[in-house]
Image 1 (tube, rainbow, N blue to C red):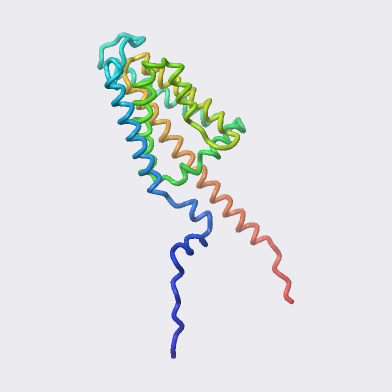
Image 2: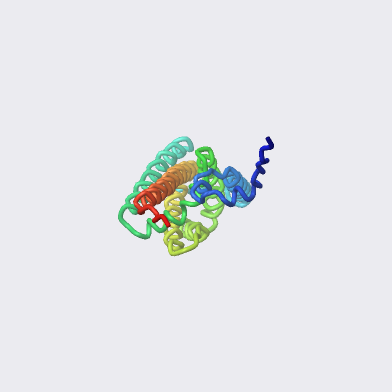
Length: 234
């Protein structure tokens, strides 16, 4: 007895026919790699230019607001960075619970976070902190000042949709905090720590939020299907 030969569905067609939620739940390792390469390039550019054009190089700036011994300044900067990160994360969670614009912003940023694995989140948090701090704080704070560098930092944070200028305003405020840390203590350590902690916490939160939304949508669809009356027989 001859059995019919089952043909395998082409990979591309199988991918296209899969449920959108299953695609949404998968982690895109390529995205983390691409972001990591981009931030490493940013770190190389910012650090190299700061080493050439900024007195003191990329790791410290001259004439900080507080004149402290280098080790004390670095320790105080790191401690203040942890406190600033805590304040930014708590305030963003409070806004999420109270303001519609915060929900729109989370909705705009969630698709990126949902595609990152745990390792991807750690890599992106660390390397985005390194790249952006070496460029916007180590290089641009001495050249443009605390306010000018923070406005430019905010303007590069663009997303599509109604949350665009909310994200720009939030990033500008965070940039002001990072720049003030650098200018206060003269050490880049505090902004690096604060930036990495904020990014890691927020990316993890947004990924959990999007995963929960996908599960709720799936459960709602199953409930809707179960509640439908059976089709009438002809």
